[in-house]
Length: 441
Image (cartoon, rainbow, N blue to C red; front, side):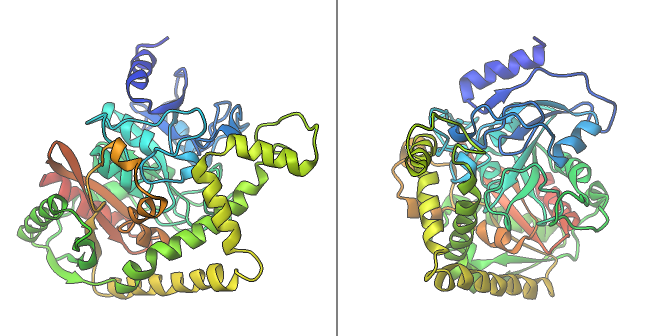
């Protein structure tokens, strides 16, 4: 066993940030040859158990690499394992892990959550140097744990990074993106994993920018909009104060900063997101029934009894809840009232963002309305209170907009995240602003 693998296994015994740890292989030369790469457990790695955090996929070893994984391997990276997550991405705290699995612990204070659903990715990123994690976001699952664990998390434009090899949560929402300890490392990783892929029908066939070149630019005269709804009563005073402090520093650097409003997004974002996401996830999870996909049992009963037994024993409570809610929302008689209406509202929310981007280069807000809560407090929240935790992150995810979370220091020994949102395919701009934020912490 190599020293790196030994150290990773010791960290995992303490923080539970991996579902699977791999032996390191000799890597090829490339721009990532000095980096260890972890991969969220919903992204396929050839011959490595990939479960999306669910007991129903236990034992599944893909015969292929996801496109994003193959790209980092081609650049010399070493894959160290599959990071723990909320089951199929269903959660904001990484506490909804699959049956019999352990949830990751916050690397700064183990009594607190890591955030979700890419909690294991954020945890191991904070613990290791020269490391990048391939994470995934549906409604905030990259930037949320990045904020709670004090690392950088970048969610790209929908379609900028191929989804081939990603186990679906919501097809119209899922994005693969990097987590790292610095903005520069996120920019480097994004350059590698971005680009058109004929295997993914949603992949965008547009050139990939040299994202790292944006880090050399200052922000003087950039127009930045502060989303005023993100600083309301639901956002803690500690988070607001740290955010305001950074805004003053950006103004001192020459940025033109105004307050802007996204009223429709903050009124309808949460219900719109959850109707669409749960409808898509209930469809995607229907194939895991123990016949062609998912764990198998002895078919001694009727198909309906077998189907029910496999799913009831191997899906966690939150997965079951989302399957039921999503199935209801797309049933005949309800589809028009819920799912179809939600897709129409989504279009209005995108237009609201696009209107602001006619005047502003980027938009900013806190990443999360709070700091990482204690595990014991998070477990007491109702499902609705859990869903409301995504209030600041569902908007850019619904709209498919690139966004990044950068740590801006600690208060009460816990990190606070600062989020920068850009127009479609403006990853360079959000990296430019994020780099300036990082330099002024």
